[in-house]
Length: 278
Image (cartoon, rainbow, N blue to C red; front, side, top):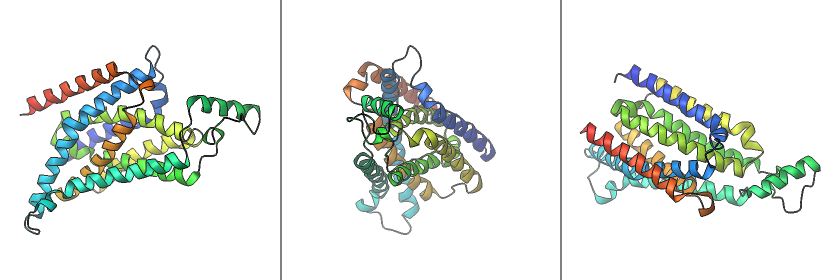
């Protein structure tokens, strides 16, 4: 696949992912499909992606980094851990932001949100049990920091999309599917934490960040093997945290049967694409 073709393909994937961001609340409420079924199916799919594609991809990046640095740094076990340390940094950074969001803007229960909405309609004080977030007292600084981290996350996804297409169209398509469903669940978490702010600005900005990532790729395409491997590892660590945080929900909000359906279906597709590519 040529550079131009990969950029066009990446643009198609970017538009699709942006559309999924904007349509996420409607997708979660599809008629005749319980939200916990769609969430669990997406969770199983994403977990299969992590174990069968993301982790091997990070390991491949480690080999590429080793080759690039072999003339500069003597290979040692510590150097071999380098790419995984970057992935760990991405994981830790997003975990820290999530902890900050949970402490400063805890996600209200659905009943609290409904009660808070009722209070907003009926009077300024609202019911005694309504949460602060439900009454619109979400801290602006935490919101913008949290949303900004997801905007960087989205931009990295589309910035590396054209490269994914050049290295394997089928894997890039499966990656797009996994990330699209992942966005639907991330949308749920952000709306629960910031029920006032996120519906007004968050979805549009997250969709815009995807477009920005593609534009940066079109203008400043990554050419360094080392840079690509480091970006993949950083993104990989972030995906790991978000997959296990968002897509393995509490028992009352999940269905193990649908989780296994998603996991088996996606694992089978990845295995098929791997076998055909050999």
